[in-house]
Image (tube, rainbow, N blue to C red; front, side, top):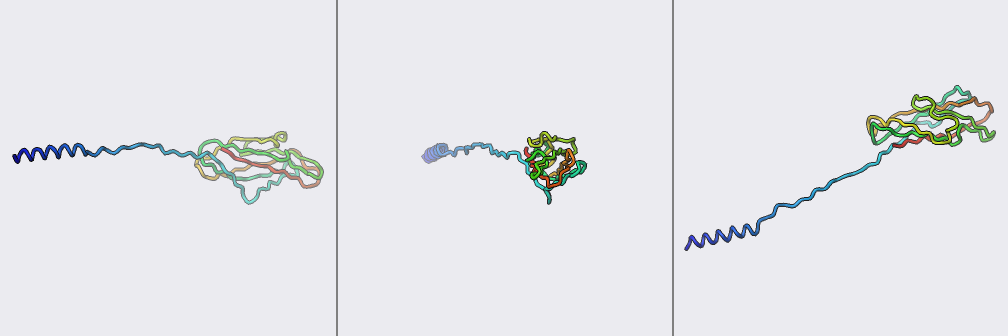
Length: 159
């Protein structure tokens, strides 16, 4: 009788443990993503003044740095002149100039300075590293009438 009772108890306990078995944990997988748009910034040195002329042979130089958050790809450098040349507002005279960038031939002519002129430039081999850049400005003709001549040349960089 004792054996039957022990056998019955063992059978009940075995059945109970099967009924209360713990299921394995359930899981789900998630993909974590993020996106950062490509961007570039521009900085200037101590001076943003480019002095040219009055003779056409006197070339002015502008210097700036660019920093992009990407590497080994082209970015765009744009040049836009407010007046299409240096302007003497008193005498209503504008003297055209050309721009050369990065040692290339003239990249903008006197006819296109008032329209954005774009050139491709390398972003650099390391993302986030500043790169020194420069351009030159050359008058097309000598200035022959006395006075102050000015223009605002806007340089813009973009991915």
